Image (cartoon, rainbow, N blue to C red; front, side, top):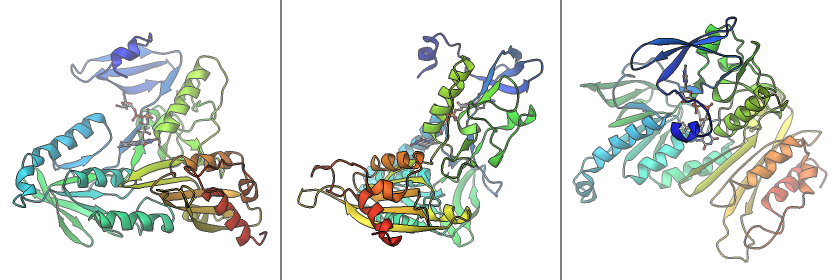
Length: 402
Ligand SMILES: Cc1cc2nc3c(=O)[nH]c(=O)nc-3n(C[C@H](O)[C@H](O)[C@H](O)COP(=O)(O)OP(=O)(O)OC[C@H]3O[C@@H](n4cnc5c(N)ncnc54)[C@H](O)[C@@H]3O)c2cc1C
């Protein structure tokens, strides 16, 4: 929504003003106008802190070069696109094989890094991804990440795993090279996509309690430790419904729900936000990749007794044209058979299937419960045993109950 559209709902919007401190006893916020540098006090009865997150920019040499970007705001996106557009003016020459390659280095192989690599590759850039872990997509399990890695290799994306960016070399304010622990790489443009940290400084300096990764600690009503002060979105924590512990998984879907709950409570309606399952979907070239709950790596970090079960199914009945393979992997608690997490990859039918499994996590269902779900079947949409049911039956077999 534009500020004008928000104002039509009777809400006062003041863009260009930054909140610089919170006086929680006197109940006002000091706000500063970015253009005029003037300060004002904004009094409140109830305050909601929804300051979001800030992209991580490590203090490494050359980080301030003009062509080392992060992608967070609309303005960041426009600036990035302008850089590519400038280069692409030479497109005809490039098409004739006479142009210089446009080297884009993406630091970080998470969701944003992967989505960016597709976008740049489609504009004709030569893309290199640097990832310090042994796999892309964070803690996702290797049967899934391997398929994604094969796909991006086919698209001529160079992926360097276990590689850490140490700095940038360049001249006239522009980086020309990325220096890593595995050598140097030419770069016309660099995008840092190595995660975000909660924008909680305002809350911290006001003495409001923070927790995991310096997120603002909130209860299920989105109340902070300070009376009459709420927080929601990427600056706040959430409960992970699988473990019952606090977590930080900053996503727009959570920010929206937490914002609604904060608003309802502020307006006097007692609603609660139970937590997140870490459900996320992404598209990487022709693949849909999705996850919910714990991966095996995360289950290991939680010291849980678990096993994984992986199957290959199909998006549609075999006899029906155009079905595609789907890989499903479950993380299952040993003994109880409780579903702890699920991941999927395939060319179709993945992104929305994961939502069923997210619902199973909310219901604390076992794989036995999942195996009995009345999931729909018609040849254009599923196999008679949906891949989610096949995966549940495979897990039961692993447990010795099939
Ligand atoms: C490239 C990209 C792709 C994404 N894709 C997805 C996706 O597919 N699905 C998904 O669920 N999520 C996605 N996300 C995450 C999603 O955008 C965020 O989780 C969501 O925007 C968080 O909302 P928020 O309101 O908490 O914070 P924000 O949207 O960051 O809003 C915070 C606002 O507060 C302002 N602000 C900060 N400090 C102050 C201050 N002191 N004074 C005044 N104003 C201040 C900021 O300028 C900003 O406008 C994506 C994010 C990025 C960057």
